[in-house]
Length: 220
Image (cartoon, rainbow, N blue to C red; front, side, top):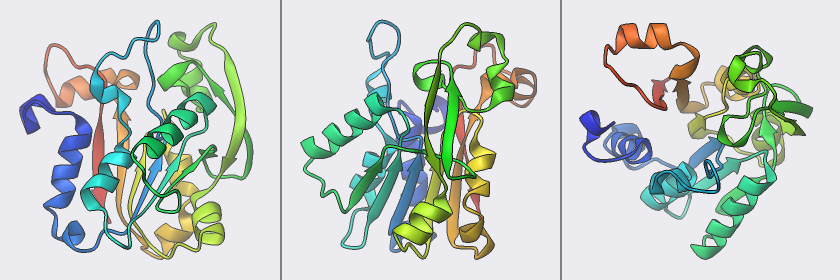
């Protein structure tokens, strides 16, 4: 990110890319943030100020207009409460930036997550990784994009759908089949977690040290 966008973070780079794209310059109304929470690392220490930020707020600030709607989904209660507190501190109307304390997948019901903090996953294949050994699990409610936005919120079109769900991205997209089949999503942003496929990542980006992950933007 530093090489691509200067001293910055992925949120700022993404926002710059979006704001300069003709599709979004005058036509940004609905942004959906799946996995919206921000987390503390280690013993309650935030590693970098950017880790405190949720991209939902960044997009709201950049693109806000009379039609803007932001829908943020976060299944873990502590992170959800932080999002609600930040919305209140910024005096953003609840009806404009809606925050849901639920996960998003391809079904409506309950799901089990494994791990801790920002790396919790509901992908059982990933949960078998040694990083998740002896970690606790968490049960929570899940729903689908089609159900909550299409049926409950009566959203016709999504401009940007961002999903950062630690391996559950495919299920998120399956749960948005109704929108996708109608070509009613302009852009999907998916986080690529390089720690799960380091060999292929390093083959494409031969650098000595790679940290974190990055976002892949897919225009429909």
